[in-house]
Amino acid sequence: MEGFMDRLANGLGKVATRINSWRYIMVIKNAFAALIPVIITGAFGTLFSAMVFDSENGLAKIDALSFLENLKPISSAVSYVTLSFLTIYAVFLIGIELAKLNKIDGVFPGIIAVMSYLSVNPMVFEFLHEDATVIAENVLAKQYTDT
Image (cartoon, rainbow, N blue to C red; front, side, top):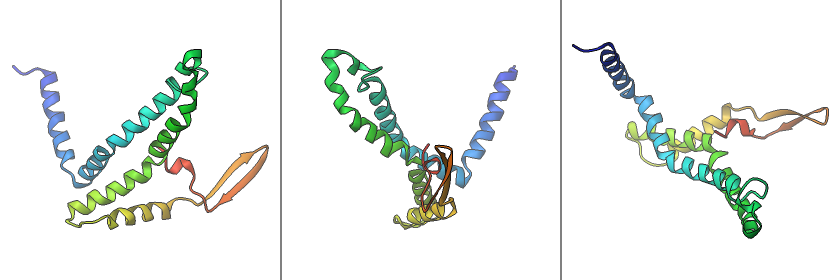
């Protein structure tokens, strides 16, 4: 006799299989699967920056390893270039994957996807600086590109 948990697992498995076969879900899944190396590289950059190369909390705090602090800009740059632009990479790869699904080759669909994404983002950013409101025009705020 099949228990409740087995029936629930089988039912959810069927639902998951059906959802997983939807074309746009497949496209997003494949794009993020291709991004896994970028995400892991960014995670290691963040990890090394905070745990190894930091002179206040990391291994660089130890006098014999203080030279490691000189390497922090490298890991910070790796973290920045991978994780701070993750949305742009994802949009590009989603465009490429959708084009593959429609049997279109090349990188142009990815470029069109990024252009479309950038065209719908606000290019005016308003922020507070020393009790004054500052308006920056023709910029892309980090909140629209990072993780």
